[in-house]
Image (tube, rainbow, N blue to C red; front, side, top):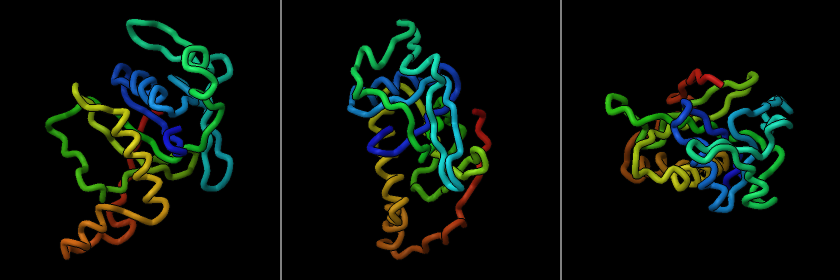
Length: 175
């Protein structure tokens, strides 16, 4: 949970999900699950994630091993369940790929029949993923409230703003 937004971090093994989660915890955000997430559909538009009972609060950090986030960082560092508001796909930076730089691409994935927005964040040394994810969470909240900074910029520049749904693209992510 980052600034009240439920963030589901996905990506290939070894890309840095657990390390990023630890950094987010250190910055005051909360861990729901690491490595395995039980996802339930609780309404027509809402998903909730939680850790399986037998691995709740545990995180695997390569080079260190298994840690218990609740015991190391305290009760305030963990949460039992959280709505899933945004999927963040961490992937190793690919120089051949064009990444969204405006925020107009509305990518989503379907989980249990519910559309969930997806951001693909390219990973390479020197990028502060925790800060990027914090900004992504705040920006997602703004979008849910009807504000899109990229659209506002286009309006300021006198350019056409794409209509809702015009830039929507489904991503098939492996969960």
